[in-house]
Length: 170
Image (cartoon, rainbow, N blue to C red):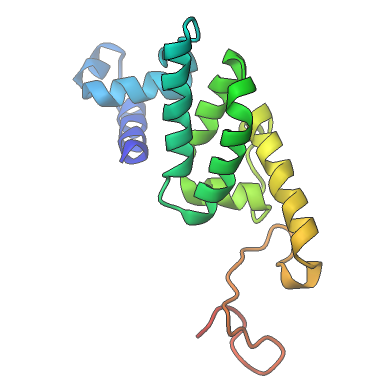
C-alpha cells in the first residue's frame, strides 16, 4: 500500500506544475515523498535503550513480515543477526532496503536482474546480496539455477529437453 501511494505521489509530483500545488497531495503521500528522497525524515532515536529496543523490534518485524516468504526468511535472518550492531547510517541504509518492492528486491538479491546503481551502492543491500549469493553457491549446483540475468520461472515438473514447454509447469 505504501509503495502504491508513493508511485501515485511521484506521478502527481511530476504532473503538478509548482511546489505550491504540491500542497494538494495527501499528507501521507507528502510524507512518503520526503522519506523516499531524504531519509532524514524518519526519526531514528538511539539515545536510550528503550528507544533503540523499539526501533530494533520495528525493523525486525518489517524484515520478517513482508508477505514474501523467501524475503521474510532472507531479510529476517540477516536483520536478526546484524541489527544490534548497526549504527545510524547503516540503519538508514536498512530502511532504504526495506522500502524496496518485494519482487524487485528478490530479483536483485538473487541476480535475476541487475540492481540500479543507487541500490548497489547501499552497504546493507550489498551485504545481504553477498549472503544470498554465498548461500546459492553453497547449497545449489549451477545447473539447477538459471543463468545470471534470467528469471527463475522453471516449475517443479520442468520438462526442458524432453520436448516439453520451455518454462514453467504448463
